[in-house]
Amino acid sequence: MATEIKVPTLGESVTEATVARWLKPLGAVVAVDDALVELETDKVTLEVNATAAGTLVEIRTPEGSNVGVGAVLGVIGEAGAAVGTAPAAAATVAASVALQDASDVLSPAVRKLVDDNKLDPAKIPASGKDGRLTKEDVQSYLVSKAAAPAPVPPAPVAAPVAPRPAPPAPKPAAPSGPRLRADREERVRMTRLRQRIAERLKDAQNTAAMLTTFNEVDMSALLALRNQYKEKFEKKHNGVKLGFMSFFVKAAVAALKELPAVNGEIDGSDLVYKNYYDIGVAVGTPQGLVVPVLRDADTLSFAGIEKAIGEYGKKARDGKLSMDEMSGGTFTISNGGVYGSLMSTPIINPPQSAIMGMHKTLDRPVAIGGKVEIRPMMYLALSYDHRIIDGREAVTFLVRVKEAIEDPQRLLLEV
Image (cartoon, rainbow, N blue to C red; front, top):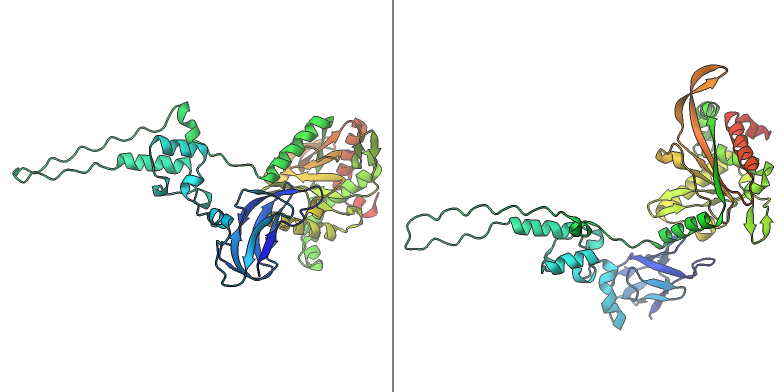
């Protein structure tokens, strides 16, 4: 009995996905719950698993295809069933295992280079993703072909004199000039996630009256506290490490309680003030920026925050974050310092009204009690929507965070 592989429900407001890659080739034997195909939406990447055991006998949607909820991706037949029985299968087998004829997957620039030089793409060694040809592959092939010495004709039988050696072949000229620039480029289709990130960030710039205010924080007390207790903390909480983020989340929540506009949003002509604190923590992945949310962060312990952030980070790198884990959020924290950023202006994550940016801790000379001392300092940034948050509130927010980080005991005593 054949079982159709269908696109599952993708989450709230998401109706379409792109087939990122097939994880099983046509004809593969599959077991129940085996991952078959990876789908990419504008929010997450998810795997579609087998609901029946058998043989993958048909692949209807090749990689790169856009599919809606409920669309049939392929068919699982009985074990040992013949493959390619459906008309669509023959056209999609190659896409599923990345073995298409090279002429079917050439980029426009590569196609032009191949056609202009009357080349057979199947004879050119390919180094691109999934065995695709790149412009560099074709150019290297042309250079090697031009550099190959011409065959020397055999000496006539009647001539006893040895043939003169053939002159060395001239070296081909290196590609130059603007005309050949396109041949040294690679055009890659944007992922749905990257497209969505671009849309949301541009919408934020177009819609919000966005400003950024800065402050700096002395990290001495926090570093000393962390160094004093990190081993005991990790031992007590079963390997959960004590990082900086839990302190900044706690400090941000305390400041949000004092300044509710920073935790609010604009809905039409209404201002919505939220008496709960779902803190988004921006995480960079190879696929793009994602923002998993710490629900009710005000109720979490330091260990609870650190554990949740660690789990979200692993899921993000593996592409396993669910829609629910990234939906909502009342305020976002982004830590560009992990990449070495000293200062930046983060962009608001709509419909939120503010985002705080952390940066690299760097030893700098500062004036302390009339003397110059070297202290580990971090710049903080708060980008905010001036339509709902006034400058006084934005500046006060960062001052409250600064006070809490420079005197961490305030967080424990809630003062």
